[in-house]
View 1 (tube, one colour):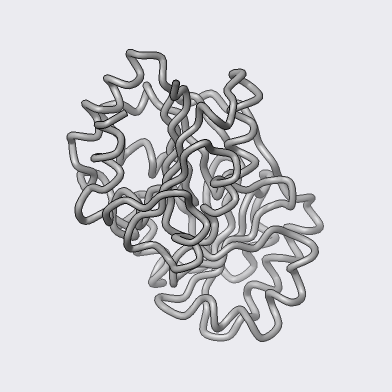
View 2 (cartoon, one colour):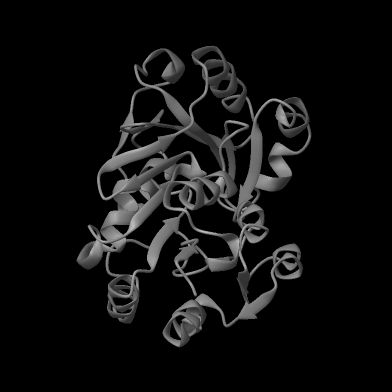
Length: 265
């Protein structure tokens, strides 16, 4: 019997950066039906809780949220779980992120997200696309944040993987958890965080077994969830290594592949 369904969002349910109104309304009916049968649904994403809530607006109080790359888990607006960086690590990470050539970055706290410039491509996309609560605080960003940081994300519109490879990823790979989230993002989260950690927390918290768990994903940061699920699905548009890691494949997000599987559940 299925008791927990976990799905990534960008590239799995909708296109990257799509905001409120982008999700097929049929998902709301299916999730309500599953919830009525005792199945918990958790959206697991690099997105901020507010951004996910807007996407799932009609059922925002009925689902669980694994936000900021799995660093925080919410039930509605109640924080159940959080993993944060030490102040020293967060500051050092942000200062290095600022030095990555041609890239921008943002820091995500337990309450808000922060970037440097309001006229940047990153700020516009986070507000106009993702619907973030994000604050532009200037070039001295590391010194302007007075809350715990759960994620630092390096952004480039299409070459984040290549541009972070020469020195940033080698420098940080043994200090924090680094995962690629699409072609635009390199997400940095605490070593004990991540999407797999969020799924494992839900299973412990509610007494759910991996055999009772179904997960969906498309990118590198989704792979760690697959080993925690009796059924794992990669959408057809997923990266090759993600399709290889999943037990099953479903149609792409454009064809509502996840929706079709969930209807059969």
